[in-house]
Length: 354
Image 1 (tube, rainbow, N blue to C red):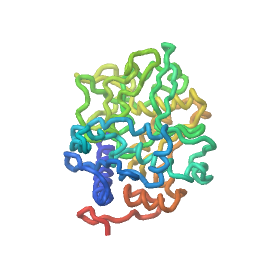
Image 2: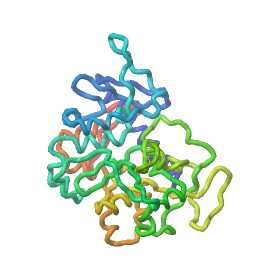
Image 3: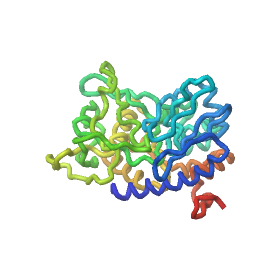
Image 4: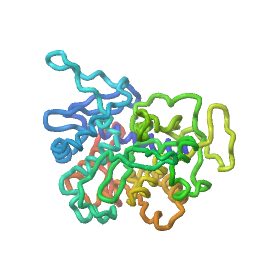
C-alpha cells in the first residue's frame, strides 16, 4: 500500500505542478529549487495567486481566518529568499499556505468563498447544519489517561462537523503505539487489534522535504499544562513509503524501527469527534484512492455503530458539483478538480493547456 500511495501522490504533484506553472503567469510567485519545482505564491496588493479572488477577499476581512497565514513554511530553505523592502527591511517569510500543494489553501478556497457555507446543497453534501461560520485550525480537546488534554488542531470545524483536508500529503501519518494508546477513550472507541499497524522509524528524524504539508502536523500536538510540543507524537514516519504493514501480535522490529499505528491523524480526529459529539469527514482528492482506503481501514476498527455513522468521506470532485460556477472554473484550472463524470482542462506533454 505504501508504494501505491507514493505513486498516487507523485502523479498528483506532477499534475498540480504543471497546472500551477501556467496559473502562476502574471501572478507573484517563485519556484522551489527541487526537481520538479513547486510553485509558491506571494501576496499582492489585493490578491494572492494561491487563492480564488473572492475567497481571499473574505479571508482578509476576517482576522481569525488570516491567522492561518501565520504558519511559516517548514522548508523555506528550498525556496528563493523573499525580496527585501524598499528600505531594506526583511521580506515576508514564506508561509505553508503559499504553496500550490497546500491542502489548507484548497480548503479555504472552497469554504471561505462567499455563499458556499450558506448553500443548502453544500450542507446536504456534508451532512451538517452550517449555522456557524467555518473555523480553520480548530483546537481539539482530546482527553488523555493522565488527565490532561491533547489540543492538536483539526483542519476545520463547521458547526457539528470536523474536517480533515488532504491533497498531496503522503498519508495520515504513523505514530508510536505508546503515544496513540495514551488517549483516555482509545479502547472505548477502537478495537486496537483491527487498527492498521506499521513500522515506525526511530533511529532518525525524517528527511527534509519540499512538501511541508506532509509533516505540518508532526509537532502540533500540545498537552495542556506541558511545555510546548510535549504532547507531540515523536518519531512519526510521516509517510508509509518503504514501510511494511505488520501484524498486531508483532512486538519486535528491525533495528531503528518499532511497531506503531498507521492513520494517526485519523485516530486522533475520530477521538476528537467522539469527545465533542461531532461528525468527522475526510475530504480528499478522487485521484488519491489510497487515502480513501486508509480511512476505511481506520473506520473498520470503530466499535460503535452509532459512532461509525458519524464518520464520512467526500472527494473534492463530489463537492465541486454543488459549488458556484466561477469557483468550479478556478478549481478546474488550478487543481484539475471537476465534478464527477466531467473531464478536467487538458494539458499537453509540455504541461500547457490546450
